[in-house]
Image (cartoon, rainbow, N blue to C red; front, side):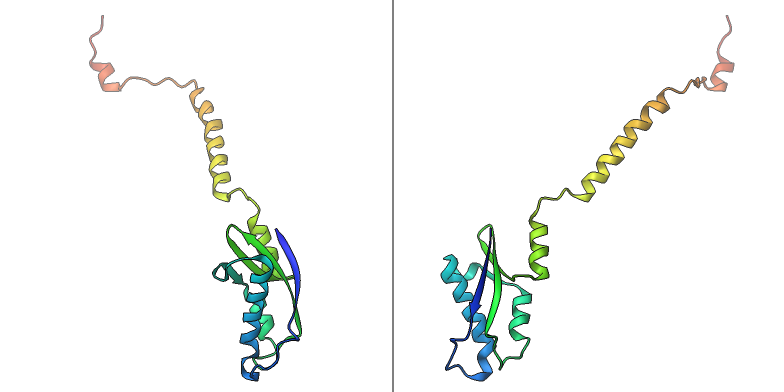
Length: 138
């Protein structure tokens, strides 16, 4: 489940300039909490969103930010709408077969293919030469 939202931050007034970016992070969390009814402890803000908020410095806030919410189990992740982390998170969520399992299966098939070729060799195994020489002749 993915939801795209634009969070407008123009209404943040009467905040000391030295705390703009910190208050924007708090406002983003409150917005997500309000619109998704998620507990605050279950909201995870990505590094890209954090970097976008602090890109202009702590004293110059953004006017708005476009974010995407992704829910996985009981956690809610907040990403930039066109961010790399969102794409990586979406690709990681898809079920992918493990690489090690495929290699093990391939090796097992090779061993099965080699085993019959060894068993079909027409070489006879002779008895030990000393034992054959000491055996009584009839």
